[in-house]
Amino acid sequence: MSSIIIYESKAIKPKGLNKADIINKEKLLNYFLAGDYEKLSALEAINLSHNKQKISLLYPGSGADAFVPLLYLQKLFPNVKKAKLIFVDYEDNIGLVKTVLDDVGVSFKGRKNKIKFYWENKLIELRFISKRIEDHLQKGKTFDVYFEKAFRLMRDQISGYEDKILSLLNEGGILISDTGFLNKDLEYIDIPRSLSSYEEMVLGIKKEKK
Ligand SMILES: C[S@@+](CC[C@H](N)C(=O)[O-])C[C@H]1O[C@@H](n2cnc3c(N)ncnc32)[C@H](O)[C@@H]1O
Image (tube, rainbow, N blue to C red; front, side, top):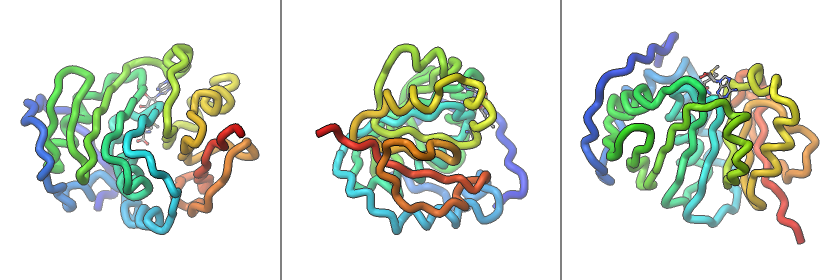
């Protein structure tokens, strides 16, 4: 477990898809500050009654943080077999994402900004979009899961941000954020607030229109 996390991009050659990859837990822990990994076990007690096998997830301001959304996916969505992750960050961090996956023993296939790999038996297609989220959202692409972490200061500068996100979240879709999204038309699910470094963790389901 680290007291600081150092990311260093290396040129990683794709080793191909391997469903049998075993994640090196010791190395994985190096990407978490003390106690943060253990806190995620609280997610295993949450039952979202989510039955979809295939989902898309949007992660704005992702940086190179692949592991946290993957662990949320693993723990909150046991039925999902295939997930399309869209990371949007104006800094191009795909090289770092490939480096950290390789470091923990996850091999991938693909080139440039689009890779595929297995994470705990789920087939993940990760696309890294080097853009400002406000420009990406203008395309109007919808998603099943919204994931946000450590992006509060940046997205607070974007006018109407939360409502735009909620309009693009599919009905029945899940919102996971470490800040904001209070008093919205969501079915809120209990989640420990301490999962957010701001103590503001929110988990909500977008209600389906009748
Ligand atoms: C504090 S870092 C958080 C990174 C990651 N979410 C994490 O938890 O480790 C914020 C990230 O947001 C990105 N960023 C800032 N403004 C942005 C914007 N308008 N659109 C997309 N990315 C942005 C930065 O490049 C940076 O990678």
